[in-house]
Length: 107
Image 1 (cartoon, rainbow, N blue to C red):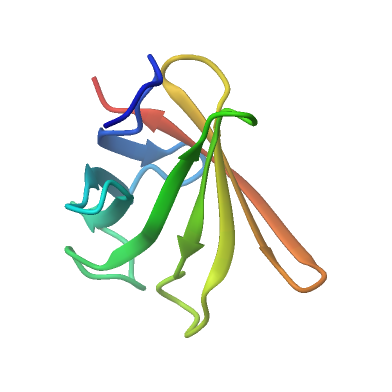
Image 2 (cartoon, rainbow, N blue to C red):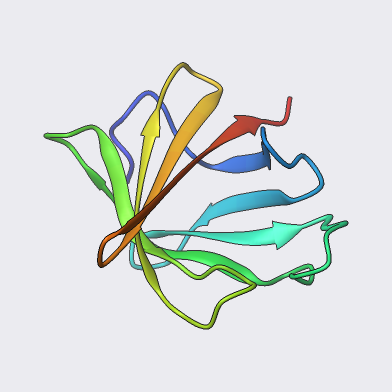
């Protein structure tokens, strides 16, 4: 079970693109996944699994796992870090490319 006081469980929306919302939930094996909900964008459908195998790292206080962008057929290493109680910084890395975006908790 999650030991951190900050949890990614729940609903989040993109700060840069609020049309896409993501719901994080815990899998039976203890890892976390995130699926697209209420998507008004063109690239993904509701229920699309965008994050998987996220595991909390106690030492770095981050969640690490895989991200699958809906507009690309690749898997990207993802690191999610809290920057405040209701804000996540998401860093996706693949080879030499890095993308950073932010999610805000839906109250």
